[in-house]
Length: 127
Ligand SMILES: Nc1nc2c(c(=O)[nH]1)N=C([C@H](O)[C@H](O)COP(=O)(O)OP(=O)(O)OP(=O)(O)O)CN2
Ligand SMILES: [Zn+2]
Image (tube, rainbow, N blue to C red; front, side, top):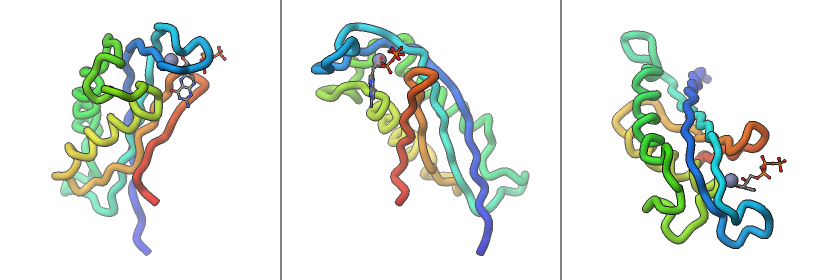
């Protein structure tokens, strides 16, 4: 059985949201400093000995989270008709990255979003 390389990068952004229908304080306008971890995996390495260049992965992730940075998440098209919960934020980042990674031999494993230092969601489409 061959081994696998599992890599991750972490970045962050700041954004506000409102969770419509939430019975508590989260239905009021508030913001977070969101952290995002992206995990990819590969069975093979390129000629440089890399599964994927961290810098390349970070740049692609930054490009996606820049669209959310200093925004009110409820206003963004990816959250039209749904609450921008940590679950939906993780899913939106995952789908955007999956498309970007389709040309690479490294595969997207999971996207983890921390809404606060104490609460996170890890989204994956793997079994
Ligand atoms: N499964 C989810 N649960 C909650 C989400 C979410 O996205 N997914 N979001 C919220 C709110 O956005 C809220 O801002 C976070 O709530 P909470 O954990 O209560 O945050 P605090 O840092 O204010 O926690 P305290 O322990 O009250 O200080 C809620 N739930
Ligand atoms: Zn919140």
